[in-house]
Length: 153
Image (cartoon, rainbow, N blue to C red; front, side, top):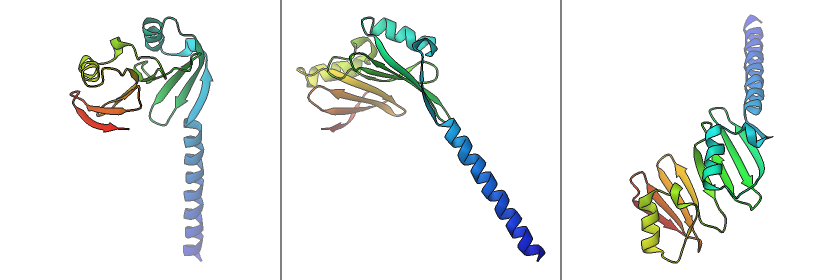
């Protein structure tokens, strides 16, 4: 009888703990609209410097368990993602060129040399390198030393 009661008590504790954890993960994974002014200063400075003629359409904050990311979508449809410090992670210019100033020189030179009629329309920083989409639909992946590692269409 005592063993049965102990099992039910333990089971109750496990279920209660699981419920609390599930609720906290739901709370932590929070994606919400924010005012442009709530972006980290570094993100706003980046936009002002590299996209002075673009108007923000909406800005969102995505809080995850381990990090926070910000997304700004411009009226033109262009999208920029930032980390919690305001460092850009991804710039998707859709149909126009990503500003040369934010493209590592070795990647820019590679694209100019090997795809002279294409332009970089999207660039993403990854933990192990870079991903670049060029006009025409090719996706180029570079490692941390800017060596091409993959071409995908």
